[in-house]
Length: 300
Image (tube, rainbow, N blue to C red):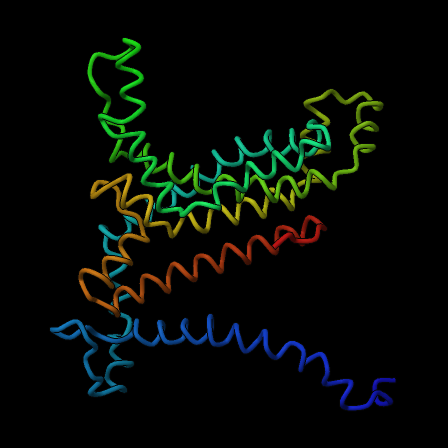
């Protein structure tokens, strides 16, 4: 049957996809390949790239992997571990906060209020993330709004050291990423068939049992999408940790930025960036496999 289709019609889908593939190739694949190539090079004295004198000897000796070997040193592994657990905690806190919020918007709020509540969730995007992070600095500093309120109420006798702590970085990460968890959860909860919950209640399941055995499995695609949308940006975040954590809290994003902007070590920075990119792609692969195994359509 396919032989009867004219060649022009068979090539039409590929022609329609050509702009997409071209854009992805120029803006994603090509920069990744350039970054991968630079990661195998060596920095010269002035921050440039040393010329490769003997490519064969470099490959045989394994010297081209020097930057990746360096990234396994304890000091860099500690930064990677801090980035990982902060991203995990941020994702968990966002999920705990966002699920009730999304459920209330999708299932409890009257229809006329849903648009207003969703608008309130999206409103933070109207302001620069950098400005919103500076606002958190105003709230958390020793003479900021929180300490001023606590001192005025007599609950504390001296200002609390809230800024430049891991807790401040976590607060900033949760605040910045929370909408990315609420929106996919709302999309899943909005499409939830309420009759299935009613059937579970009729069969004797309590509120808690019907929630964990019916609602949560049916909204798994939204949960998985929210986890990916929060975990990945949190893993590479550097603005929040730089402003709210100062020099005390360095994450993987800060380390990569410092290699390019301060140390001027492009090969090592490229190696770290490529490792982070590989971790992100792995997270996306796990998400796709998990959603496919659950028999659901991915939201991403």
